[in-house]
Length: 326
View 1 (tube, rainbow, N blue to C red):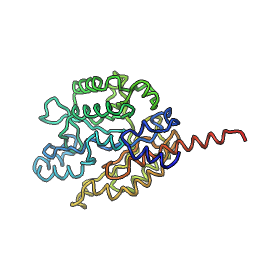
View 2: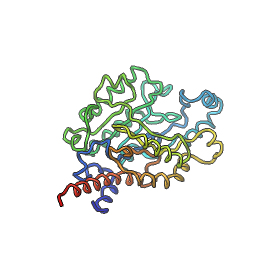
View 3: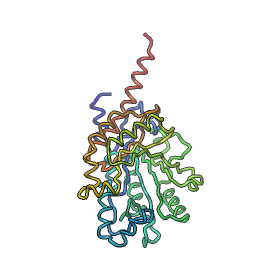
View 4: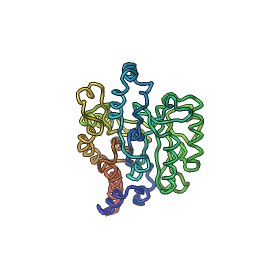
């Protein structure tokens, strides 16, 4: 496969799955390289909302006493994306990290959260995603629903019912081995990972939690070292995520009072993307699958991850040549 075709697939990312070569259409999706966004809904955090109840007592107390200081600070360090889901999908993102929460005084509506709560509801975001999928019938999205801050059993029941109703026949069953060709033949476009075992057991359309490797460090070199160490232990059998996202702590924030997550990420992108470009997907021990990043629109992140799939193609061509008789 020449560089021109690779550029064509990676450059117009809104339909990149539908334009992958024939040789990759029967590869299980967990053996492809798939770009994802970390904390996908953090582009619409509500700076007027309180700090999550799961945060530390000290932070919640500080927020109660000095909300005009804590909330803008949390907003700066919790905003990890800048685009709505539709635009992320247009960039080529096919894995969405959705952290769902019940907002105090939010009524029965569910929101998302990262430090503080979002302005957009779960219903609004998923309906926007469903419209995008209707316009791109050969693209498959993996949705990871997790955290579930303050959700009740009834909230879970209603949320799952809404997901089932909204995506309906587009849902891929957890017992399937999804490939692009098999999903297309059944009209399936959505894989929902739901981090609640009770709901997962009750609904065969829901997939178990997808492992997410992240280093919990603000240092890109430590992030890379952590991911390399994890690779040496072997990759999971199904879907899994390699997280390029950096993580700050209170000490780092105090030392960098005029910085924010976007600046920290921008400075690290060159090193992180260089590592990404050296990876290859596939079932082997070091094979990557989903790769997640913050601020996915700031760089050629999606193009780089999508382009990794052509290494599978080269390997297949090389194997075929070796099998040919002399």
